[in-house]
Length: 275
Ligand SMILES: [Zn+2]
Image (tube, rainbow, N blue to C red; front, side):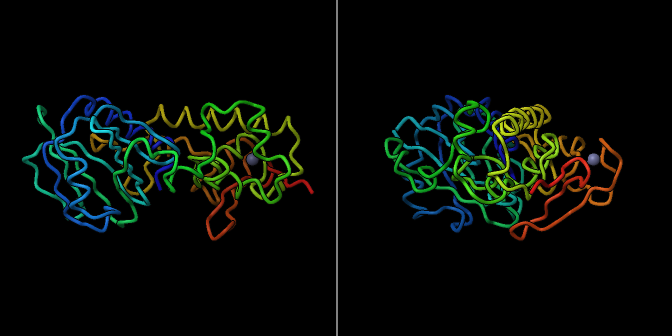
């Protein structure tokens, strides 16, 4: 599933090409992806100019000149591709935006169809159910705000980091990688982490995310940037997807456990669980 670094990579790619371009025509091929009446979506979006492309958590936001914003979530396997209008459609292409004054069109492709796209009035952003409950952004959170997220909170650290209402943008890959770098066990109880450990974790998360953005994200399954290229951060993973392989720090085997039905990878020697 695309997480913050993958979504950020796509946003940067879209920003470069789309800013200032007019949407000439919208073709909804699979209406299930558009979470509102397709005709309304077309009407809201067509003939307007793209002003800005931005990210909030794992959401992509495209602001248009007519006070409308397009909201997109890539689900498990969604991606946006910029390509020549003459190229044949793929069977997983669900939406096509034709752009004025460019040799490219924007395609939304999604193998498993868990993604969603809709439009809303830009002024209503703070009331939008998808966005209003999101926690703060990891890349610019201050030390005190980060500590406050966990004050009086019960439960395990990994589950809290995955909860988008506490902290927006992390998924399985980047929580596992950050917890490894910070030497914190994924099942560590939050109330056992002191402010110093939390500050290490905050800095580590930011470092891991920035490195991943620089590498264009992790391509595990079906993740591509807008030019159809894969990311390379998967080559730098230290624990995620490395069950049974030697820890890059201490050499013992990486373990996998299930936390909330999802795999968690960690080193049992570097990440000791404190009771
Ligand atoms: Zn280790």
